[in-house]
Image (cartoon, rainbow, N blue to C red; front, side, top):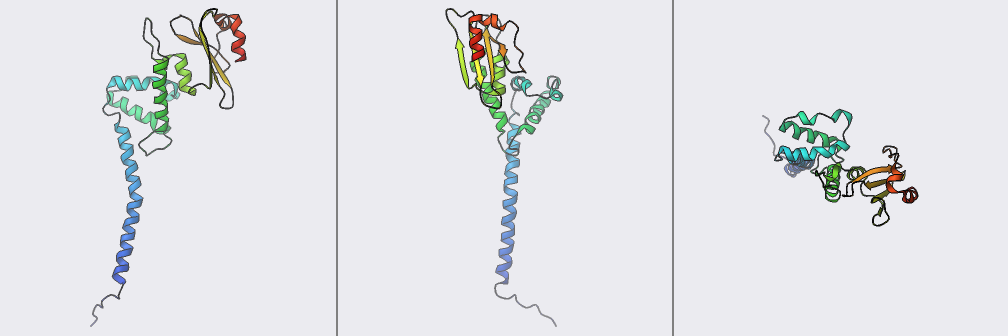
Length: 215
């Protein structure tokens, strides 16, 4: 009659070692994925406690980034729908999906904070910086590489010149304070996407028009 023989010396230890190794490898594989999922969930839940007014303030500046199919959808949504829209808007623009940070969103929001601080307009109505011409250009291209401002006696109207030298094409923009209250509007640019006003040279003054072109 066959009787079970005791395992050879070292067999149990080898089996245990193999099983422990397999478990360890499984945990190593699952760990980062689980952490990434948790990070992603936390990032999505960031909007969970936001009021509708806060969500609307996040949505407004996105007009500069939206594709045609994304326009006109948000205003008619419920509060939950607005949260979902903002999550879905940024998800495909995330360069590191699955992590707790969306670097593209963070960079954009940091620029929003800058333009709202530096370029907001006062007067009969308050205009947040992101809705101004200077704010719009800043959001699209970031801070200009070179700036030049003209103000004071002899200057017909105050104006700012911005130049971007990085990238394949040099771009420059001339913003004029037409009201005298710090409300600067874009009147001239060599950027084909930003048509210049026909009377821009008159607005800055003929003596300064050449400065703008040489800048």
